[in-house]
Image (cartoon, rainbow, N blue to C red):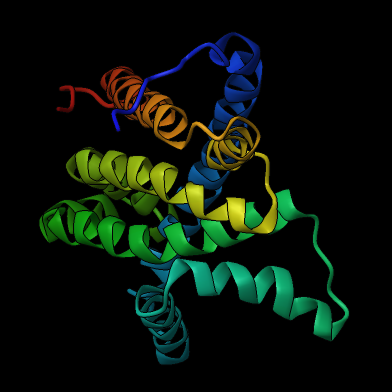
Length: 222
């Protein structure tokens, strides 16, 4: 028996899909900014003269990168209440996404920091700049330019992985898709449309990040 496509339900579902997409973009916007800032601190910490700081950050990075994101999310949302810490689903999702992204981008930023010639840092110190000024004004801008394409890709990947947070009832795009297909019994059409929305969001987000990078970082990025 053939399968008859039916998209008649889509008119009533557009608002739900749009709201889900908006929540997905909100989650990645917050977690990307927070994760990038924390990863800069983490990458700097991994190059600290203090062994305890280096080892603590290295352990955190290895722990997060070698455990499933879903398990991390469940630990935060379902596990922490056992310790008396209860988080709103959206807050738990942002926290899990931020911690996960920080671990991956710490390594990316670190590679950028290592790519900056040591001679430039030594020259800046010789001119009387303090180490913090050298890092912020000399090293970091060059490192960000080097790693920006990789950072952009990681943000897009994290946006796609945010579909997992539907498991704790965050009303993002995948959650809304699950609700729609349960209501309409049109699983093929529902997930086909949502797949196209994710594709459009990925392409749009990448282009937005590249355009922003071209403005913020001299010389442009690809």
